[in-house]
Amino acid sequence: MTRRSAKLRCLNLAATCALVAAAAPSAAVTIDFEPPTYAPGALIGQDGWIKNAYYGDLNGTVSVSAASPLAGAQSLSYSQTVAGGFSDVSKDDAILISPGVQGTDLTVSYVIKAVTNSFGGPIGGVFLGPSTSGGSSPIFGRINGGVFEVGANLGIDPVNEFFFSEGERLKVTYEVDFDTSNMNLILENLDFGEIYSEAFPFFAGYGAPSGPNGEFIVDVGVFLRGGDVQIDDIMLTAGVGPLVTDFTWNAAGSGNWNQTTNWDPPGLPGTVAGRQ
Image 1 (cartoon, rainbow, N blue to C red):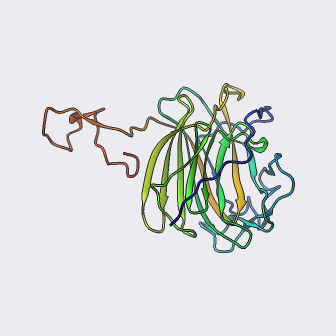
Image 2: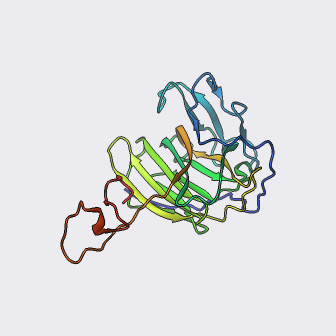
Image 3: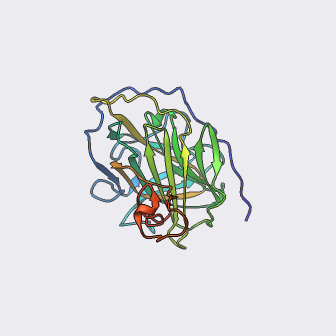
């Protein structure tokens, strides 16, 4: 299997966020593309989804479809119909996140499946930012052909240690810490069970909290740039608290693995699959 990385072609880091009727604070938001909120047909115009501003015409169709959904009765479905171009879409003000929580401030997960079509290889994923419709994407991951990529320190890092084939369903999770500008990326191959986890710094600075009570405003954007892509069950959960990803053995020599006091911090490594 050959692997390649690609440059992200359109990132507007200078995008600013104007506060317009920000979403009410909520502990969790689920975007599942299910009825009655979503009806089959074009996604743009439904439940606040809009075309992003940094490109011209859509290079394909972006719809809600009941054809072979990833979960439930319907999924987001994208199919490229012309060579080149974008079809990125966004949902503004998806959730407000209060800063200052130790550890993970926001957990985002989604299921994605992508394949090549006659116009190109698959490029698809989810990005978060204060103005995703304008191109701000400080937090993101995406499928690019046969590799998963994550944005980190103004670069695109291919996750070559995680293997999958086109057409396999992946569950992608971002455990986001706004206070340290880092996220823990978790990749799960739902068809074959492989799990991978690694911490990454944000691609770029997120900016200061700008919500009505000092919260981070989080928009959800979707990369839709090539091939055929399905996405479902975008779930955002606020304030889940600290997540320990590394434990150090602190006993003098041998000891009981399952004794929490033999570890620093106290606890048992390996109990949260894919994270330790």
